[in-house]
Image (tube, rainbow, N blue to C red; front, side, top):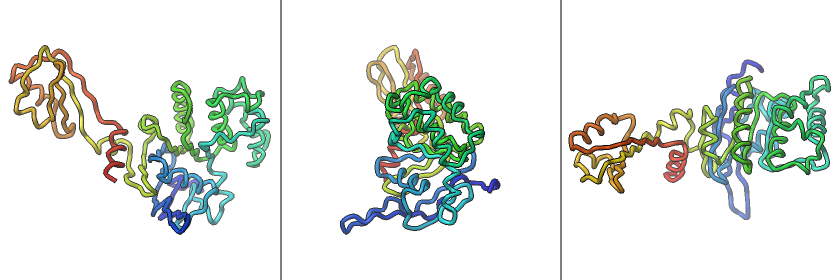
Length: 308
């Protein structure tokens, strides 16, 4: 199965929950191809269907219809093999409090049938900054350490795909950046990464491809670069020496002046900033500084959800 192109393939996947004579579409004709060796992001508000899909991959939720393959293995035809291909890091901190990190990893390795000589428990704990805590009871670890321990557990059988469900929820900024660094390291070594996140910054920082979900449906699925070009607006601010009347030619750029700051918006793919500067020069508008701001993934995400 090493010749597969996509680490995860989902075709027309549906999940319907029946609750009190009401049908809820958790996933509706969900199609996705996660390319081998990529970092793929699933974005969406609560209830969008992200965790439902991840739970299907792990065998915790049964799909209503459709097909899913993991590394070329159909999860219905060979569920046992397909699950060895993935490591899942859940949102919940579900760690036995009476085991130490090293014991938990050794136990997990045994459950996956990894021979003792092939286990890398010590190395994994070291890479995740848990070497000093390896013999401490899990109940004594901080929330951030427990989050890292969950990632360590998912890596013991050296999966082809690592699936992270809100991996940095509730951790501080420094730890989040350390985890990002480690995720990139795993990816450079050939591991496919799929993550769900509420942190738009996280998706923008890490992901090559992004699918945006809402109410079980895919709204948009594309490369990060194409998504960032989707809304091509750029904002520029000129720090002026005084307040000026706004020239008529600048009105198309939603121009406004307040406290000696001229603010304009323009389509970055259609308008050259030099055109705006020339208009200022023509009208003898003197500026001291220029500040530019480009729309990020959060603006696109909010805009797509709002339009949906």
